Image 1 (cartoon, helix red, strand yellow):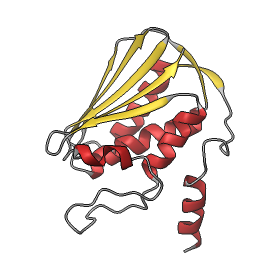
Image 2 (image 1 turned 60 degrees about the horizontal axis):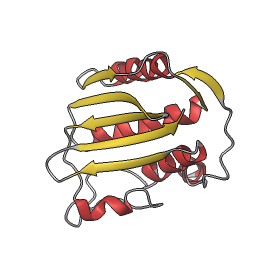
Image 3 (image 1 turned 60 degrees about the vertical axis):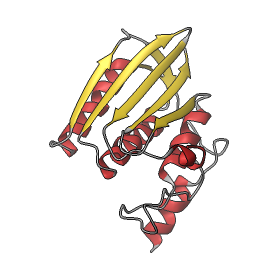
Image 4 (image 1 turned 90 degrees about the horizontal axis):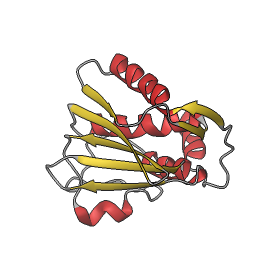
Length: 168
């Protein structure tokens, strides 16, 4: 019970309460490490990096950002994805990371609620996937703490695309 309470407290911090330890990182190398670790943990999931950027240096908190990105990837698997693509693009001084999956998708009327604290998308009246409804809230807080943004494009039965944008 104490572990559950600790997890709720740690993941429910607001963007202004998160202490970031920012450092300069090579974005592509950083993302490749996350992809490699994810492949080890999920060998049956196809994950493909499509990096359309080269040697982009970002100033980020590696620990918090790794946790946030892994949360999005884990959600993709939790909600039925067998193939994930991580794509990067540099557009007008913005570094974009798109995570596209082929999972069950999310109905459009739920998109605005996804990043709310304790919100979980219902499947009928049941939650088949375990969780506290804090993961995407935490992801959003981490991205905001980095002065970035996150958005989702999805539809039921068609997978999801989460796009994270950072200023360069």
